[in-house]
Image (cartoon, rainbow, N blue to C red):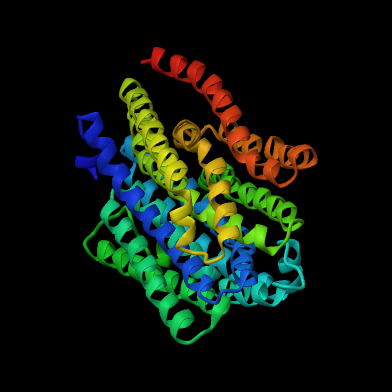
Length: 447
């Protein structure tokens, strides 16, 4: 842990914490694309549409884990910067058990309200059966989905970066293998895709728990799993939740905005939903890599803040933003030039390929600005500034996006709906910079 967080070379420090997180996000993306690819082998647009419609629900389940995963990670990193190891371990223990309890509650409620949730997601008569098949197995795996996603953040915060990345990759690889078995061989369609996803998270969770038991046996007081260490107090819960809720709302509101978006796209038919779903999955490459970079660096930022290394913290944030902008620009160029060949991997119909490539060219325009938005959001989370993090989240996925979808649909129909994302995120980048520049100037002047 110390060798990672106290690395003096800024670029090396960013890469040591950022690259494993990006690799983990990349494997997550690959399994998402694999889901879509194997489901597309059915040659039924309704099945692809069902997977697209269920994505927001899966994101909401993951977001609940973020309350304790991202919230706990921020608190733990700052406590370690202050050299409070015992408090860090107690916080870790609380977050693990809180995620397990939340997962069981989600499992029960999700299965009880399966049909209404499918309809709220935008399912219609063509795809509601496929949508319900998918959601059933996703809710069955909810406790493991939450634990696996939360463990990634918690492990990074205590310096177990390699273990956090291995667990994420392990779950995603198993998911992809099972996708092939359940869909391509057994022909289970959307149900097979969801079952593969849940079983992948089960395996990842088992790996993380084994790692915690191993570390506890070695005397590592930062990762206690024993119920005897479950002793949360009001201040700890408040600190974790106050940061975790804005972090979770990023995903929740993203899901809500995607549900709104899917409902508007579904006006134009299952073909439009299928085209958007594939374009969106491809565009998730720069999105998730940017998220991985910023989330990987966040514990380092929190550690510097807790240790009162404000100048170093500011330099890390600025360098990470520049890396993110460059990475996004590269992906924009690739998608503009090679949109059609990429779409053709998933589709056979020339009309759908053309439409998907066109959607992708529009969506990817915002890729460069993601480096700014995601890092500044992670910066405020790492510092425990929940209100500012929440402000960015609400603007991005509710206050700007939802009215934007409605207005753009009114004036420019389907093309306008698709163009909402790059328009809103360009505007949000400006807002983020206006929030960050005064904040970092005030913070560094105190050192």
